[in-house]
Length: 599
Image: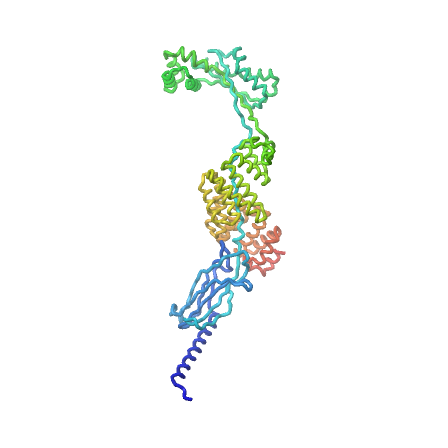
């Protein structure tokens, strides 16, 4: 048989090219062992809800052959499971100087974090191929970084519950009762007609009622006519006379001991036109033009005496002023300050419980008393029952807010997740009702707390921002900033977290999360001081010691690391279990000091 020389030549050339391609690919794969792969950060870290990192690859000079591609594929490997992360290509046509200069590529990659993802390896596989990728050869799996550091997940949940003011004053309040006794012109003797009149009868009735009295003030007055000295004496004398009379009446009714416990204050009110102005204002007999003229003199220039002299020259002075207005000014005004009767806290609590149980009418307590009763019990179920009764009684924003706040507190304490979800939903519905009735910072911060309990961070942030922008108290705004700072840590926004937390309160969670944010943004000295501050405030919380140990590990301070780790394990065994697999301590796993700290 005769062979076609051209066919034989083509076959030989094709075989040669295939052999050359195969050789080139093998050579590239062989040289790949010298490629430089860098991962930052290493070990891999969880921030927010993802694991993000930069991977840089540098190929050896002359490795990337003409008309070839070298692909770098990465994945996170946990046991037999893999999370594909993608790949990037070195294409020979894009690196014409590959024979003399190292081809380099840096790529940002990330994958979503889930709690079930544990420690593993970031692995890469290199693949050499033709431009058309019809032939390829791959390297073995090459581990380039370990993971995962999950320190950011140790953020402490922070919520703030704000109750609207109940409006009830449970402190002692004094209420005044006023009795006026009148005197004749130029005299300070109490007339018999006064001692038998309606004012005297009122005083006697008041005394016999045995009201708890703290102070009795007697202020003597005078009408403006007469000399200054005479008027001063009259005012003072009249106050002393009435003080004596009140004491005599109290002793008459066998209240000697009470008299001694009361503080009497007497004084004369002289050279004062204010009482006259008050009488002019309420008088119904004076002509309007006469009122205006009198007030013009009183409010005009000059001293007390000159004004009085001007008044005496008025044509209607004797009939309307001296005979009609001035007698009302010749008094001793007696102000008796007694203690306002109130229910005791125990009585309010008892009645509130009965109202909540439907045993007595809601009208047994005022709305303020019922709202105050909610603050008297530490038992959340009782608090909820009281505020549920308050909502039925008043149907106002404050009642709905306080009921919603109580639901939030119940949800925080609930361990059953289904019940917790039910309570949070009740809280959200109730607080939204409060806002419909009246927008308030209290309801918004409570909603922010409700949403953070269910992990709905965007809605929690929205409500917290509304609370900060509201007209609520500084305490409410500080609480909202604490929630915002906690959300910032959860979202991996550590600089923002520190700003928000700095505007919050001094609660333990805020202290802890502030120190954690400093640690995560790699401000280790500030973090160290922050955890020391937290430990001083919460010496029995293992978490503080544990993160102080993590901070020490970042600072390469093995002595401080082991000291704090030992304390953390002593307070809670779970931190000892965590430490042996925590990549924060990877460099110390084989250290005897580290091992001894966990014994």
